[in-house]
Length: 461
Image (cartoon, rainbow, N blue to C red):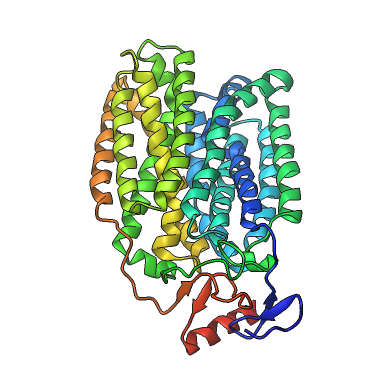
């Protein structure tokens, strides 16, 4: 690679790219930014919205059916635009997409603060769910894939600890805010907090890729050993693999079960003679177990076949559903919380790793967008399905048994979802062999035709 001056070098396609910059690998700076991103999704997460539900019902005169119906419909429709978010990420880069999403999420909090009835509550749920656990979660979960490869599982596990911390702290914080300033002002505070924390990080700290700061994935140029070539599939190619549909189904199932149970955990506990405090203990144990499992699962994702970890997650999900049928038995509340946390920790912690290692980074936004669309849509059905079953049967035992059976089926299916075998026209390797080589990330070993096409796309954009 020919040196152009002190700050740039020639890239493989002839364009100039930043020369290697010495010092700390910037990926470690991006890690806490990614953690902040996942915490910032909280205003649209079920565990945060649940704290406002009593206020919605009391102040706006909504019935349980109106509230859960608005939540289901809002979440279902929120899933539809997420494929476009993934395409925006691939086309315009993560930082631009994140800035737009954060600003809109802050605005969604203001819409929620101004809700006056069923229609405006539905609109608030739609915006909060689309922009929080939908768009912002999609974008933040894709950030570290462009900075890490060998340690991707480990850093993803660390990032997901932010979600566990939010689950443990945000509901209590929301209840305190509602008691202190009222639910409308609490939504305003949440919107201002999201924008006030995230926008400075995105504008002054965030970078899309290592070559933006003169580095390569996993570390400084010349210090990273090459890794085996990996796949670079389009969304269409990915959907032709069996693993895509199995992994997608596993994620959708956990979204349905996890969201449904979290939304209804208090009435489930009360129906078995327990109290709100017991439900809070279950959620606290859940959050703690999830945090630990995110860390351990992230490390395992760098060392263990990913489909085996997915199978273990499904088994734990099935076990937690069975234990939730008998929470009155001593020790079951803690055991259920532990299994729920392990299931979510494994599933949520390795999904981003699976997408990268199974189908590549080149079209990651579109692939993750497809996942987010289905997962968010599935999460919309969970609370309503549990509530409907209770209305029809007078209990929760039947639906929890069905969840357990579905988890066991999913565990068996996961055995048939190893990393796909694929011979793509595009492959990548990471890390140059000499200090004066600083290829862009990922380095794509293209055929002459593929290289020309990639260069033309960059010029068109």
